[in-house]
Each structure stands twice: as C-alpha cells, then as structure tokens.
Amino acid sequence: MNFSFTEQQLEFRDAVRQVLAKECTTDDVRAAYDAPVARTSRWATLAELGVTGLTVPEAHGGLGLGMVDLVPLIEEAGRVALPEPLATTTGIAAPFLADVADSGSVGTSGARAGVWLTGIAQGDLTAAVADVRWPDLPVAGADGADLLLVVADTPDGPELHALEGSMTATAPAQSLDPTRRLGTPQWEPSAATLLLAGDTARTAIDRTADRAAVVTGAELLGLADTMIAMTAGYAKDRQQFGKPIGTFQAVKHLVAGAQVLLEFARPVVYGAAWALDQDSPDASRAASVAKSYASEAALEAARVALQVHGAIGYTWECDLHLFLKRSWALAEAWGSAAEHRARLLDSLLAER
Image (cartoon, rainbow, N blue to C red):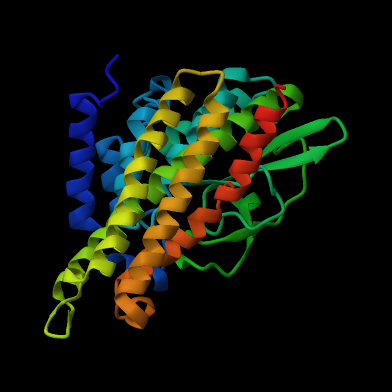
C-alpha cells in the first residue's frame, strides 16, 4: 500500500505554498490584527485556485475532494498564520453542509445547504461552526461570517441550525489571536433556522467534531514548522560569548526535541484524514490521537521558540508572537490534548 501523497496533491500544495508566501507575509498578518476582514483579495485568489471549494461536492461547483487532499493545504495556511477562515469554512463548514445536502431530512434544508456550498466554492461566502462540545462558547470566525452553523440541545436530541444574513448577529468577544474574530451568536432556535434534528443531526455533528479536530491539527503542524524554522534561524544569528547560541548543545537539544514531536505528529494527522475519508471504524479515535499529537507538538514548538528567543519573542516587533498566539488558541480549540486523550481512553474502556 502506498501511504504517500499523489503527485497532483503535492503540486497543489506547492502551488498554494507559493501563493501564500507571496500574498500572506507577516506584515499582512499584522494588518489583519487591526482590520480583520473575512473575505479579502487573498480569499478571492484561493477561490480561483479552487482551494475554498476543495471539499464542496462537484454538483455545487467544488472539487469534491476529501480530507487527505485538504490537510496539506491547511498545513500551508498554518505555516503563514493565514488570517482568513479557510480551516473553518472549507475544512469544517463545507463538509458539514455536504452532509446536510445529502440528508435533506428537514424541509428544504438540502437545497439551502446547496446554495451555501456554491457560495463557498465561488469564494462569496465564509462560514463559522460552533464547537459542538461547548455550543455556548464564543465561536471562532463568527464575527463577520456570512453563515453560522450552531447546535441546540433539546429534549428530543440535538438540532443543527443555520444563521445567515441578518440572523448572524454576534457579540464580539476578546480573542488571544485577533485574526480569529471570536463572536457569541445572538439567536433563538426556530423553524426558519433548523437544518437537521435527531439521529441525523447527531451523526453529522459527531463527524464534524472529528473533522474539526483533524483540520485544526493540520493547521497546528504548519504553525509548529514555522516556529521551529524561525527559532533555528534566530539561534544562528544571535551571538553569545562570541559565538551563535545555536552552537550550544542545550539549544540544539531544545530545537531538535521540538522537531521530533512535529515529525511524529505529521503522519498521525495525515493518517486520521485518510481514516475519515475511508469512513474507518476507528476514524474518531484517529482524530483524537491526531489532535492530541498536533497540539502537543505545537505547544512544545511555541515553548522552545519563546525560550530561545527570550523575552523579545513576545514583543510586537518580533514576528514570533503571531504564531505563538495562534498556536496557543488552536491547541485548545476543538479539544485539548488532554481532552482527546480522555476521550480516547473512554472509547477504549467502553469496549472492555
């Protein structure tokens, strides 16, 4: 069995890397701190490349590809700390809506989902999804999103609701990473917002939580890679006692240790993406392992980067803080490493 990416997948990844390296510099990320905008010229460029519609079914104008095709691109987005909501829109919301379109169990929900999917593929719509484990918490990307997917618990089971247009009113919330634009939705469940209910909703919600864990893990891989590279570069330039600090064994061990964790996490995330695409019975467990590994790798890369840079690493003048903040935020999003380990343990004990 061949576990490597195809030539086409690697070419697509490389093309996206080149575009983002040119159009999403650290200066661009800094600008997004002051004036965050969900749909920018970068977003339009990604739409033209087919990136925003990668997971949108072909029937709705997308490429109809899966998680294995997506995770390398999300990793590239993490590598540059992309401010636009690619992970939430294409990685989480689009597959969620595709599940709705396939079910069509509540009135015209399938047709509505199809319209939104077309908007995502064309780059005309951004979406945010409430963390299905904690639906009352602020939603990443909600402030300024065109569409919000939220979950309501009812005596009859979970319900999936969609808020669009004037219904997407949110109360902005403070975020460690301002580019994530947290917001608390202001809404009331109604027949007009309902998409899915009951067992169908539960299945879609569970699948979405697994996808979100893997997509977030992929973004953390890119963030960790950049922080390690920045740290190695700084260690080569920073002089102490007449020589670069990178020549000191203690510094070498710190950076190497972070790199090892990243190299262990990367194939785990890729494997979880494959398991989701294949509807593997162990896909949910694989997603938890992936998020756990990726979160720990990114947190260690952040810790090492800040330690090697010293106090300057967290100052506004140093680009490192852009990646530190995103890593700290995403390490907790859609389940921390500890939460996913506990989830995995519960799953294994349930089989005894």
